[in-house]
Image (cartoon, rainbow, N blue to C red; front, side, top):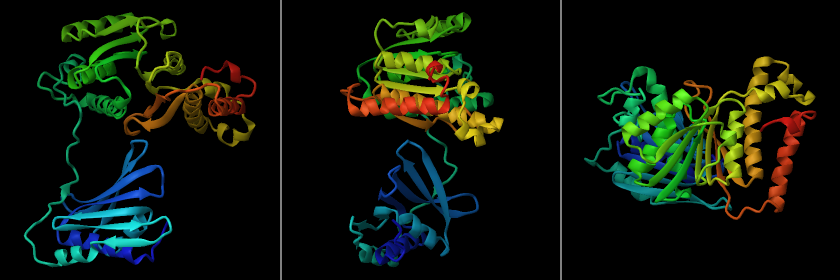
Length: 398
């Protein structure tokens, strides 16, 4: 909802720039967005070695955070005004006061405390708010000193993460951040977890450490994979760490039945249709939370038969990108039909790995498979499969 002629909006943007000029700005919080994929935007003053600028940090509902920078000059006023016009509330917080802009559903606006804040900013004051350095170090859940990271070859005995393992270290921490986002959906005292197609089990150890040693939860966790040498190695490391609640089993996830059904199923880069085996098992167990990051996507690329999309599928590189996205979308559609709320999230910067999409599914309470919404979700899923592969839809694993 753009309202560039809104006098109150223009005034709070002017106050924002005045507070910046006076070194009084703490932050401006833009909330109640018209874009329902957003939660809020926070504007702060930032600095590099050469420049000062305003940074708008946008928090999205899919947990993604994006940034946009504005130079400190009058040319930024239209851009800042346009950005702010899509929000129903703006709180400008300064060292010596604050003001609040509000817009009602009918479009009426009001600016509370604007004149008082302006007088405060115009007055001489000794209080100065230092801009934040834009290269501040990210605070990770893990810091590299954890013994399991050293035994897995991620960091050395001094806790320094090896250069060649920096991307893996960031990936593990990002996965734990996404775990933290859903931990309110899980039991707080005793927790059962499965890592299916666990591979070298970086995540198994990290997730176990997070819940057992950081959250002090009683954890029973099992990692399952087909490679006996990897499983033996992981069990040896778990024993050395005295992770008594963590075990690793060699076997096919399709044939695995846990002694106790898990509340949480995780999987990182299970190859091709192995991701579908993981999701199928987790849904059969009515797992409360599923976090899965797929790897390669080959099956649909070999099976797609959709003349309507031939303008894409005729080009091999674009065909693969389409099939990657369509496969994960169909997986989410299937989980929706099985009683889950789903979302696709970015696990890590795509510059580090193209395999950066996480599929998150949270079990809906009191799900009724016979409800109209459940039937509609199933129809949507089946229709999408039939559209992409009309002659082979029933044989696809996703």
